[in-house]
Length: 154
Image (cartoon, rainbow, N blue to C red; front, side, top):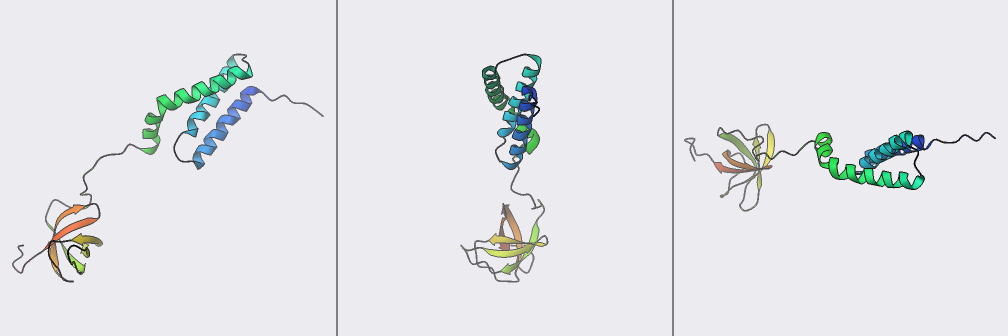
């Protein structure tokens, strides 16, 4: 039987690839940095002749350092940074009207058809189905409405 020695460089390189594969299956973006540590160890083993104990210390050190230094930066790169925006994603600044499709009996919510979609709606007074209402404000997926009188005013 032929005994082929396995290079420690190849072992550390394959361990790094395994960590990257595991990262795809796990949430949290942490295992990725163990892959970086494994590849840094493979590079050092390729350049220098070091013992197994030194390799393990090098692996742990580079993994933890890369985690502490690069995680927040790379997380923003790969996952995107969160932007703080106002709640009014779909509500225009111009006055908008909608039609009540499910009666609004305060303090319970009803439904309003507005901009081609159905929205949860709240009001300060009872509003019957079919009433045309003005959208006063929006908070996430809830709109606050008030009825429009015959003259088109509140």
